[in-house]
Image (cartoon, rainbow, N blue to C red; front, side):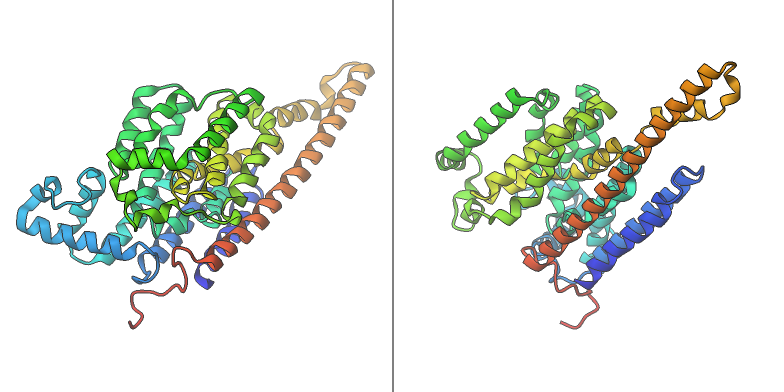
Length: 407
């Protein structure tokens, strides 16, 4: 656990000192960039040096990379389109393996490249779209998304690509959204389900939509086995096998706790989030989908694979939540306008300006306290969640060992 806790501690300390303190200074962008770069390097090093026992899916991806290396040196690029390629429907992932295998047969190099892709894309996303980048990086690690990238490599690459489509989903631009979804689906086929999402993710969040969401959730949970039998009969036949039936087992309530708490919190403060940016209704809906899917995970583990897609958007919505309860720019601008009382010619105007200034200052102080307490709550809950994930150790993240360790 030490390696992961040190990483999280670094993000908290460096995030506060580089990005939070004196964040109104002109060099905040430079300091934020430095934080993101250093944190990304730390994650990439941690992921690249891990041994083959770190990550439950490591042997599967290692074995596939070896197959690709052997296959392309016998058949060339034709291997990617042959029946021997088990990930032929996911040509993006196959091609990534192919490119690395052209240069080396060392699986550690591939794992490093995969980490650079996931962490690198996340870093760019956070820099461009997060209102509080250091909190986004904290959520990425503490909520288990970084740990997932050491296991579910295909899905995590796909999700890290898909998150860039949220911008176009908000702006109702279907073609660029579709292009990004198709690219993400080339790494994991589950992403195809995100195409129809374009038409429902901007639905207003109110008691009517929540009732519909809740009703659909109850219906799916009630008909889960008949639906499972129907789907596996014609499409995903693997899940009907003894090994595949593992995904139909349920998880404990702790698995759903943080995603559901996140959803409830987002719903409580959705008014502030939407005041800051009405287009954030997309992220609010994503939070609802993740909460409901994780509730369904308590019945069948399979739903967690879908819930992960939506829950990962927490790296954007949680900083958005904190930014929405913090001091807004309009208050700052009005306060600056009232700072110079010399512009007012009579006493009545000065008195009114002073009163307005006191009210805004009081509101600012209140919002600052709320922001600090809310940020502290996110750090505390995130740290506890990280500890729970590591102690549960469902995906073999611990003990962390490097590939230099003796087998």
